[in-house]
Image (cartoon, rainbow, N blue to C red):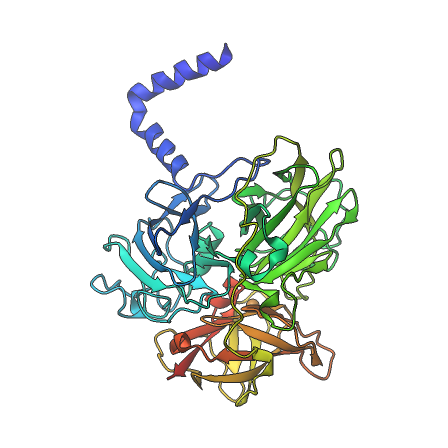
Length: 566
Ligand SMILES: [Cu+2]
């Protein structure tokens, strides 16, 4: 009865104030999100047809009542952030229309004063503003040129004609999970935190690793966002945490306890799991069912350390691919290789694909992320729940990988680890307080080639920090001279981690994003990683970037440009 009264009174209001309520409704529909505690649905998928994937995406945003702004990519059928499913050799024709609204004055940036150049989206970085957008196809080895995978010169403005991306998935692209997101220097954080990201799957992982043949597959995109309840006290179930520090971006700083307020909230396929109670999302499975989980950390700044608990017992997760590349791309590993682990660290930007076995009926089961030690200068990434696993015989069916796939032919390129590097380069991450006496003053973020002067990345400079030659392989030693963890990422190619903290690890697989451990302020040497960088593919020719994948750091200047010459 009471509901009826409310409906009637709303209808009355509408007679005099219809435009207000219609606007509120429209805002509600743009970039709509499932409720907290909802069942996690797979993102909608778009499949290529006869070797071509045609996609029309529109970038949209919507201001929320709490002052935050949601961002999303909507396809021609109004599906949000669809997963793009392609086969090696496919042609992708993707148009991107910029329908973004400028809700807030853009944050201070050296480029924000510039006037958009409406005539040519490929022209110049002068065109960058907070409502410019573009796409980076993270992990794909496609050329770094305008209309393919260029982020240095491609800026699509609101009101521009739909911009066409047109590229071919290489015939030898490894089958696995990749992703797309905007990459406008200085403004990437706000768009990605707002939700602007989606998955790309190069089909055929079951052809690479027969351990996953016939398994149902799930796609989970874990994003972060500004806290929904920033002023809430911690849950009473948490231990009391001594102190709360906020960094200059307003994020809770690492307190070293594994608890307390996180820097950002997380969501699973847009189902938010907010601080302080972390009411988990729901993942439905059949009891004991095996599935392939394809997990993307699309966070702006949050590290994940995934674990599946039955009761309190960590379960085995069968890792088969990292960053889009099956582990057994290494020819020494068997065709059904699985690396069983009890937890999986995933830096922002990285992907893990692993076999999960659902719990028996009646066993409580929880997907969690465990705390990550990001250093004294890093963000707080505490222990928290992500999703409860609910089993029933009626759980939905998910698309299954082929049960008897034709194995992929062995790669014709020699394994990266067995190719001699033509040179060794040294780079380092560092940070500088603009006022060394004021810990709250702005920080500049640098990623510097040893011997060059540390300075924030300037997209207008157009001068490469590194010149490499296509066809070669190089070793890069990357140091971290700051007191927080950074995640090194390079466009267009994968690399192999040879040394971690100076010790050989020779990982028998490839990555496109890797942690570089933080400096503790005491050791005689800065911690470092040694990477074998692969410039053999002709698609790496051109100008592109390497950077920290913590987007506040990237936007703040922790980026450099490489030119690969033919
Ligand atoms: Cu960083």
